[in-house]
Image (cartoon, rainbow, N blue to C red; front, side, top):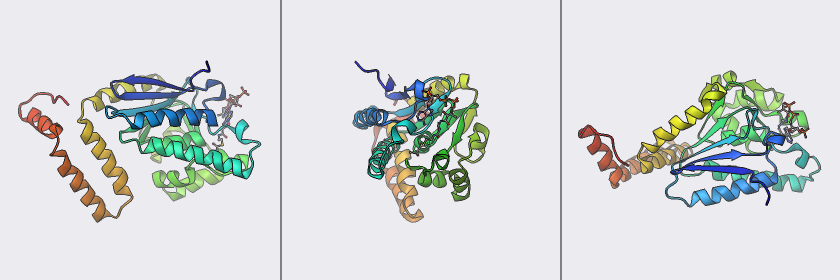
Length: 257
Ligand code: CAA
């Protein structure tokens, strides 16, 4: 049987996905993308899903990009199909109804950076290296980088990165808002555990509602987005979660969601 390219660790609905192609620094080829899409298709159906963490195997690389060896001989039509497969898969990760967090444990280049950009937020080890080096290979980013990067860090910084192809370290990634936190690699595990504990203690419907409000609201004008927030806020009051959460506060105990 062939080895799994996506390892799954499921702790009561907090699911950690590890891209496992260490010999190629976890580069994304069509087999990895197909397996990831199949995993996401299963996760989308789960009502008990509470969060997804995604990382790369080993201590050197999150994802070093799309697979250059596989892309090298592609025709324009084949390149379009490869990019479409990746965009579809990455979109499914982005639109999971729960928080999706990238644990960036090393090289985060090209398609790897584009994968991290589709996550709700990213934390990085202090040895992480980011960049969209596609122009060095004679192409442009093809997995969403020209669109999600400017939305996250602003058009000037995105243009700096996609036209020079320069690599930046974790501290610069933090400064420009590409990642939320930087920590020694040895602490990423403890961060993941802490996050798991935190998210497990929160109302699962409320967490989903908060993500929906931010994602859908960002696509709308402010008044429509505020109306969406009001609708979702009111909807919370139809749930057991709201009565449990507020009763627990008043009764000075921990809520049991
Ligand atoms: N695709 C395929 N294989 C890759 C790869 C990639 N993106 N990145 C690394 N590898 C492979 C290497 O070929 C090497 O394989 P072999 O041992 O069989 O030779 C192995 O991983 C280890 O890599 P290195 O020996 O190069 O390791 P290093 O520590 O010297 O360098 C690195 C690490 C700086 C990340 C370097 O590997 C590198 O520059 N990789 C390519 C990064 C890149 O350009 N990414 C963008 C790809 S294009 C893209 O993603 C397009 C898009 O938007 C869709």
